[in-house]
Image 1 (tube, rainbow, N blue to C red):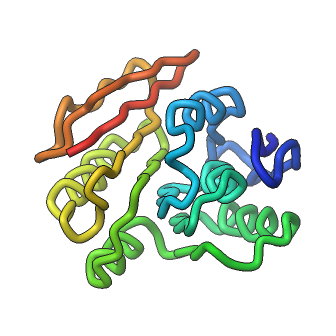
Image 2 (cartoon, rainbow, N blue to C red):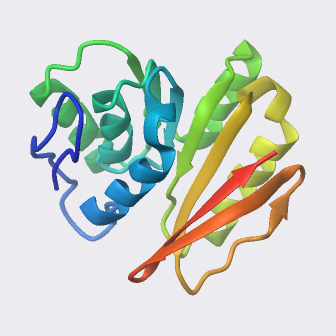
Amino acid sequence: MRVIAGEFRSRRLETPRGMATRPTSDKLRETLFNVLGASVAGAKFLDLYAGSGAVGIEAISRGAEFVWFAEKAPAAVAAIRANLRALKIAGGYALEDRGVARLLGSLEKSARAVDVVFLDPPYEAVDEYMRTMEFLAAHASEVLAKDAVVIAEHARKQALAEAYGELKRVRVLEQGDAALSFYKS
């Protein structure tokens, strides 16, 4: 696995050992960031269920202003820390190692609006998709910037809802066994 573009282009990333984490493929990350384009530069970005941190690190590499990583699996947290250290990324990010709910709760309380949310829970954790999307919809005014986009990576055969509150799906991209669903309010 490697960083696709930007400041850290072609640099290798460590992934957690074992089968508990399914990293977003290089090809799917490239597709994601091609769609996001120039909007990443200067963005406040959430990488939820971050795994190795590859998506958030890609955002940093492409000029995101700040990236929040949320991950609670110890092996994945260690991989994120190792990747940030190897790339000598000293600031412009925060890592919440107690999970997604903790990070979203703190963002809600601080009223820090984010521009891009990427979530990639384990495909079989259907309740995690629903819980996270419903939280984002219910607290959009506290957590999401005006033109924010929420992107969920999921199994191609696992359709997500067309809408979660005022978050409406505006696009679906399928690639291999994976899909990206884009939501806006």
